[in-house]
Image 1 (tube, rainbow, N blue to C red):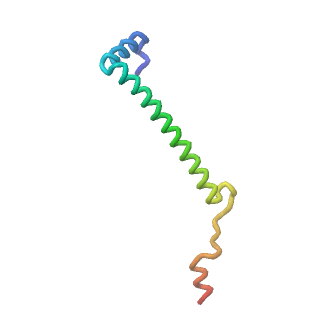
Image 2 (image 1 turned 120 degrees about the horizontal axis):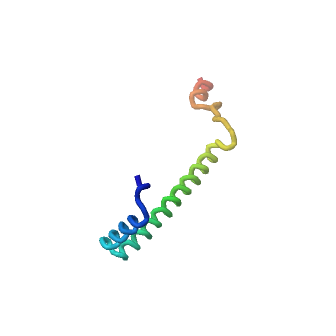
Length: 80
């Protein structure tokens, strides 16, 4: 789709965008986009850390299985 666009055409589009929005708004757009990417990466790394912490808390990394020896149903049967 974009393979048919050459460098001079992209330069013309850039000049038109600068004329419409102005250089100040164009600069803030770039910094806002950069901050959004940083925020996204930060959120992804925080989510990965939370996932790792959750898996460690559940014992998934240790290879442990769930322990169902003392369930409330079995405790009630022992009392009866």
